[in-house]
Image (cartoon, rainbow, N blue to C red; front, side, top):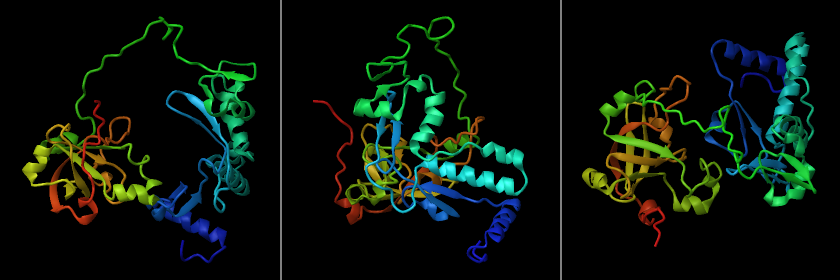
Length: 331
């Protein structure tokens, strides 16, 4: 791509398609902030986030609300739905130019001008009770919103569903079904061998201290000052056996790769079972996760076994931290 003169679209397309036909991948990242994935992408499409766009969202209790735009997105950033519109329109135009009208027709109808257009095309027309829900009505519901699914619109309010299955009907027989299933072992190929070869289970996931995969918090000095490195929670007895102390830098390694973290003593952890904060820019947990997937092609992120060894005594950046329990202890 770098060899193509700027602005020569036809030659750029030929170069990209030539590489793809030889087995290459063309990577596009849609993102709000710079990320490591974006650094490796061929093209980055800047997206708008909450507050920079009109956002309809649903939380864990099925409560839908409208968060209205209150500031402009930076530069040419757009909501995801309008990025999709632009892609669809470009694809339709390109396929028609190529004389493939049957393929071009698959991208017709993407003429959304606003987030509301996309909402009306998708949710309003297709969701259960979606025909009762519009931006105007959501705006009137304010921060309370309504609980999905919508069942009516009365007295200026969307009538939602406070509790699912309140009528006691769970299926054709009117009863809840609890499906028994047998433990099938470690489904992903290679996991049993990992378990037999390496002593420590290394689970991973999110924590309340950082937002999601830290994609925004990595630019927040307050958060990064508190958590400069991802923690690896270990039982104190395991740490003593390995000669580790709170805040020491450790390496987690197996046949898949290696990563780094800081040791976090956790008395409630089980012996030889650890937990690491995932997706941290200074220690990628994914480095020690195998490529094995189950029959549904889902990677097994949560069952990885590895060795743990000390890299260095706690440096200044971790020595100043508190390692009190992160768990809430009532009373």
